[in-house]
Image (cartoon, rainbow, N blue to C red; front, side, top):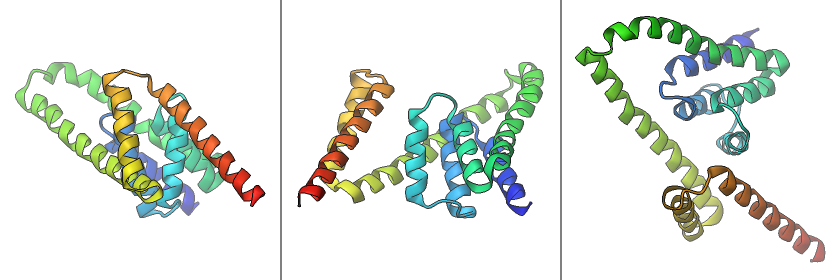
Length: 186
């Protein structure tokens, strides 16, 4: 029962504080899962996040579902999903019913504008952590080249992220197969 309560609290906090959508929730999920409750290591979280990003649907619920299942089975999955979604549903009902009357007030505009740099900083921190993990695994030069290539593909050439992810998965599988062949032939 303690685990279920911890799952609920962890994902309720993510749901209530994840202002800015699913990607803004990722650092919050990381904090709860890796740092606070230690249900996963940094590496396991990174692998799970990479896999979750290849699947369709909202990232916050995919993370909640997988982590909930891993920690406490089917009940944990349902618990984490409900805890993630309830704050959004409640806040939407409350905010949408009242926000229209307050949307032109300066402090509401300021509050909304102030959230953007906070979410940006959280995403920058997570990006650095993933880049650092890549650097440790591949080295500086390959990590920088891959980062630059993906940036150009996404930002300048407007290649769909799904295509990039698919190509990178295929490359990773080819590299793995080549390593396995070398291991068998040695």
